[in-house]
Image (cartoon, rainbow over all chains, first blue to last red; front, side, top):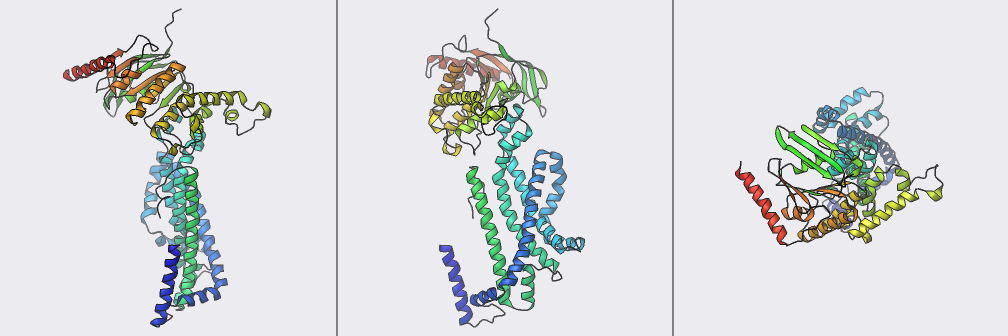
Length: 255
Length: 272
């Protein structure tokens, strides 16, 4: 409740300051002007949102799938773990947006694929790392017991390791969800204005280019709203899992 | 015919070297059906390693370990309860028994098998399993907490569930790796008594690793006293048979046994 109130009062102050000091609209439009732009641009923005959401969602699901599989294999095999190490370090340390031009060259005929690949690269590492630390969090004593009793690796995975890892994996999922959007928007910036199918980043760039700042804010608010909805739905999923499996993850309690 | 109890497991001249350090040094001992054994020694003396050697979890560098029992006839309890946080007391206690059951499906009762008519669905096994569970949970005072989750239990209760989980396997040998050392004094004494009661009821042999002299004297009939360097200084017997007279807390017998162990350690250190 208090957060809603503080948000609304900031909007109000913004509106008053704009009117009081007659701030030029190209510099900072009033919230009401943004609302109008949001209304008139609604259809276009929705179309762009669908495009960006497609990129984000596809990249996100591919990253989750890939991250869990790779994370699992680097947990069970030292060779995989050490073999992947240089790439995971590169993935962590290179700003992925700087790889975007390369991806655009490679996927010359398919801008959508280039954007997905870029967004995927941004969010895959947290998934791998969350999966590995999840599996590693499995109780060492129980792992020894399962080995002693020669319980098959599949049973052990199903009854012991996977449930132990799940809350960690879902924590990674939440982080990856936010990053997928960052990757999708960033990639679209780099891909520039040449594309024919247009996402929200293109709307941002065009509005800035034309100095239609109200439309820029309108597009920006759609991006934010989308990011917020990703965050809260994945956070809900994570908290639900933490309750269901009665595990306290580091992040289930913060924010 | 003689009526000496069966040997469950024997170690002969066992040596374990890890990273160039000799952890265990010419260990020879035999465990019998129904034994109450303690491995007593200071931290880092290799007593936990010996427990892992017995279970077959730790390879030896030299010597022979002969097991007359299968892995499934051994059960382990660790210093931590190591319960699954997402399962309640009942399911935690049953998890290993279910996984090790020859016909796991009938016991879990979740899947129906086409070979059995539904009326007979796994009933004998599942019923006896639950009967045993009720008996053991009753013994440790947790019968009413079957549906509780580990995060709702105290440390002592969790350890009791771990003990029940081990005993649900109907082991012939119970391996206890400092199971009570993380508990407060009152809880520890209660659990020690419960272990003795469970032994009296089931006769399951156990090997207890501990660094606590009193605990060893109270719970074991045969105490293997370790030096700091992984060898057995002496075997002390507190009574003639595992079922024999138990030593009471605060008795003079405890005092004299503790003194005997203390003297052993002192003379071992003097000899270095």
